[in-house]
Image (tube, rainbow, N blue to C red; front, side, top):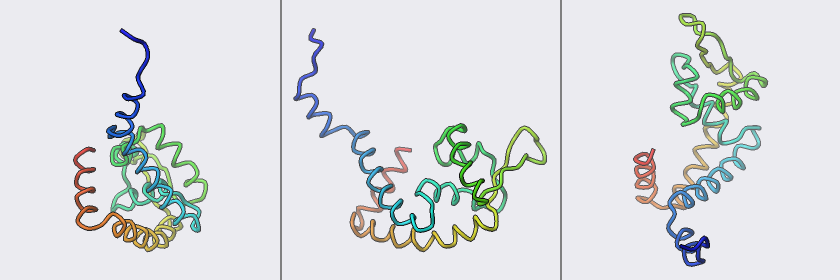
Amino acid sequence: MSNVVSYAVTVHVRDTCLCLHLQRAARAVARRFDAALRPLGITNGQFSLLMSLNRPEPPTIGAVAGLLAMDRTTLTAALKPLARRGLVKVASDPVDKRSRRLQLTRDGNALLAKAVPIWKRTHAALDRDVGWPNAARLRADLRNLS
């Protein structure tokens, strides 16, 4: 058995690898939203994180990590710059002091209110580029994968 992978295999992986194509698409979409949100000083990941905190009751770190498909350590690191900017408050759970709850501050809510129209415009343009009903089908397929 050879220890060399043929170029034909490389081309096959390049052309058929779902993981590769999802990563490339995710990076392209992320760059688009990053550019749109840059005037507010946040990234698309920070927008998603702030949006995930927009709930009637402050969620736990575990709940947010699950929603965003992140591990707790990565989420904790992502929260730090938002907390430093005063956009997010991290507090102990009043019932279980070992658990932490996350809450948008007044400034966090105000920033999110400015970001949503930008997100809507960027998202509508992306939907137009993908084309209807392809965009709806893509969302459904991605939900099924996750």
